[in-house]
Amino acid sequence: MLQRLWIWLIFLYSKGGEEKMVTVCVSLIINGRRTFNQIPVNLQDDVKADLKAMGLGTDGKPLV
Image (cartoon, rainbow, N blue to C red; front, side, top):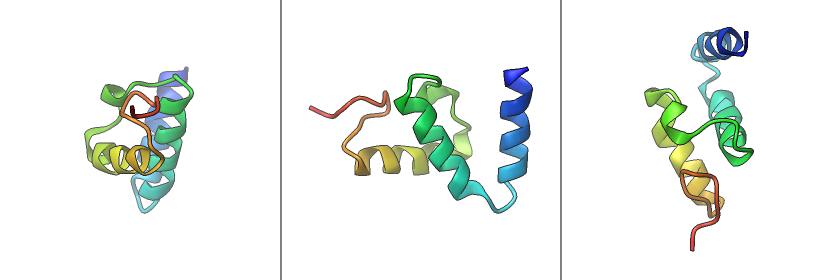
């Protein structure tokens, strides 16, 4: 069920809502619900940049 929702969200937001999907993905990583490798490849660069801007690594934990 959650997998279908995730796919639906990717489909919905990939049409102009990519920025919102990046925010969702960043939140999921920070909360430990997804890993960076589970993020769609087309969003990974933006997700990584947002995490870095917040002082976080791709695991959602603070950079040392």
